[in-house]
Image 1 (tube, one colour):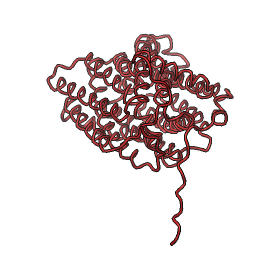
Image 2 (cartoon, one colour; image 1 turned 90 degrees about the vertical axis):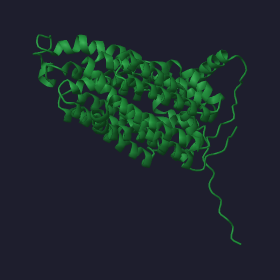
Image 3 (cartoon, rainbow, N blue to C red; image 1 turned 180 degrees about the vertical axis):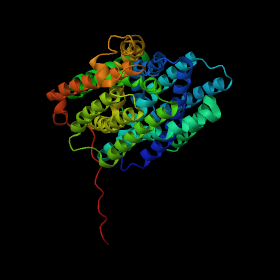
Length: 448
């Protein structure tokens, strides 16, 4: 075991570079799969189900992943998870190249990727505090979001081009190759492991259950952190309820190229927000940007639904994806600073479970409600076709999904006001002491 205090970000940057290249490859596959699914179904429900299968296993397995991240070698866990993901991607590419790919295969691919993420994400997240000095936690959070931003910015147009040239199977093969960069940098980097300070007795099942209970109690005893998680559960529900409809919303009245442009606008917003977070590190009181930027994101969410133009939709996503890295980065800093290093895995697991607990409900509801309720309301003959709502946001194809975005944004603003009114959330940084020590200051070398 190693309890060393991190001195600089060098090792983190090496890991980050490899993960970023892998994320770019995964972004190519994600975009290509969206185009492939819509071309075959033309409905919103398959998109929602794909996201559901890509999320639910990660939520359910989070306690096991968090327990292993604290009790076992975090580097080994990341290596195994990344390797398994690469092999599944290769298998899916071969099926796609054979011409036998079916929609249910995509659901299976998403589910398996979610299983591996349940182990990889807690291990990587818990390792950050061991790799990065406390003063640079905000920068590290910004860089992690920057990886996603680069994926959103670079991959859409490239994926659209590659999809036309080499098809879905070829795109997946490129994704498979990018995994070797993540694996190579991970093999080349030493990841310190903190000393475990909690009991380890009992069977594996008893261990996972006791660790899950430990993580729950740890957060429950800290009302500010606990309240933040339930706030983010609602944020994730509202954001994902609408966002899962992005591709069908855009494609209902625009071209595939327009979808790529919208995703690039999203990536540009996330890139700018991530760059700002990685250089700035957030305000002295991180809770200000945690709550404030979610409010800004809510405005962007509502904007997406007011018009079918790809320009307006892109502007809304730019605002949302600019705000999210700043809010989530500040949240990560709060949790990294307030939670002891040796329990980070278990706390991250319960944190993920709570924050994402309502997302599967959003995925299950979004597609059917869009296809069977909101879209019929806004089409010719629907109850809202000639209403004041239609005068504001338009009617016809895609406008029912637009109404979902507007309502989600308005409700999110209200939820955010209630969160800010909670004194435990608002004063979380004053109520809880820091659990991570500052790196020691370098000592001057005495002159001869």
